[in-house]
Length: 268
Image (cartoon, rainbow, N blue to C red; front, side):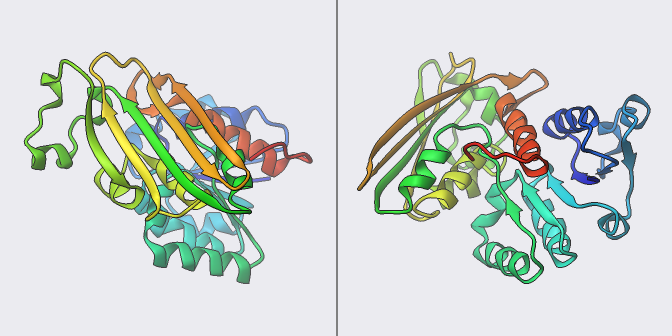
């Protein structure tokens, strides 16, 4: 199988290096507008090919994986689906745009392909998806992050809040998932995944806590429904060069690709 990877940041590089070692993978095409992120991957990895002609690549690949940004989802994923190519999306927050989500679902159905969304940096998606088959009463996501993981957000400038001055944990957001993703587009994609698996963006409660002593990106998921209750914690280590990104998110993506190209599927 040939694969196209859109974006080559921390997650993209982790995926590409893993794909290069898989016997089932032929050529790995990379779409990346920032050439400095490539860092000689074509020379390092035998299967990697860089290209700036996305439409030509679609004729050669069987799966398109997005690891770039929410805007990249809208730019690249519908075209892939129109060409009958299944897609794997990391920047799930893009699907707060209901029109984009509906469009992708329709295109996938019309062209006999799929939109895959990995579990990402949180556990419990499998249980949540199972509970959603019957009635769910409540879904709550509580995320605990260090100031460095959230610095530079316009949301805090509007509040007049300087995260570097915090000496104790502080709740900086408490509301619905749709607004959380809008305020923190690069930090809370797990809220989008949970929303799509469960009650939707407007019924999934999100609380974000900034903790100056936090050393990990931590998520607590609480689900209550007719089949019982789920409560689980995920305490993630970040990429050293990118505190906004949890290493588990990249590993989840690699795991999802292995399931797609493999002959077995365990969990989600």
